Length: 170
Image (cartoon, rainbow, N blue to C red; front, side):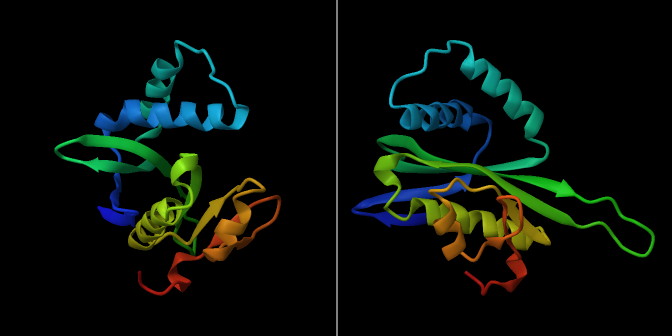
């Protein structure tokens, strides 16, 4: 679990598990509502999200950023996930793995406090440990500069790519 000092608060970054399902669904809802500027009524969303989570869990790793303490409890403030794609081997070459970074979101009130960078650091460490050939993502126009500063480079059709093996140790 990584921690980020946040103006007196500790922001913990850890791999999410089944206990975080409600928090992750809440962050996904907040992502849309922050962009739209109004609440979205969808009473079946949480059940739909839970179904998607269970389908995706064998091939995705989810991280959650949270503030709080064991005494006061924790509040989720961000998340990110990586879809692992395993390439089929071919004669003369072994298959490799790549990671597709997706659904990165941090509550606006925490976006300028190091939380996005801490989430991305967790993803890059995971990619190095799993020996991914590359990480891919499709950034929004607003997030593209953040990822480019982190070392991602254009990879065609609106994608950015990073070779984790080229980065120095964290």
